[in-house]
Image (tube, rainbow, N blue to C red):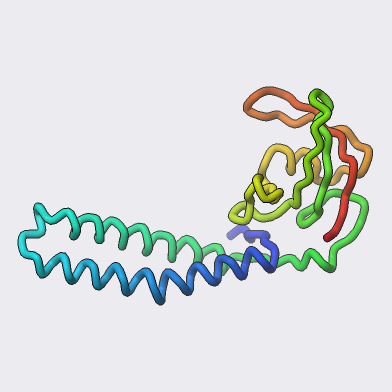
Amino acid sequence: MDKVPMTGEGYRVLDEELKRLKTVERPSVIASISEARAHGDLSENAEYHAAKDRQGWIEGRIAEIEDKLSRAQVIDVSKLSGKQVKFGATITVVDEDTEEESCYQIVGEHEADVKQGRLSLTSPLARGTIGKEKGDVVEVYTPGGVKSYEILKVEWV
């Protein structure tokens, strides 16, 4: 099985979500199902069906998180350094067409949040910059077409 790279923070967030799902959400939905069953005929009981759907989602999410955590490769970003872009690096790039600067940290897939400057390792921009250095220009194939970015900074925060 493939390892799932993530930062220590990403691992902690997933672990907390797993604990919340197991200790709060799961018991709550079980109580909701029991309460809905007490109302009688289940075939037309919307509360029962909603609770069962929620239970299915919770159990699926628990399985997904447990799988990710079991395959986690936690990378301590504070111990990384160098001039090349790699997992954990914080990069500043400029779009050569619009001259718009952006700053992103390259993180695991589940940690990505572009609005918070956290870019998935599998995103086109991250894949295009991996292995490159400050001053390099990369062409990135995006859904909107090919874009060119210049790497202005590679930092290890």
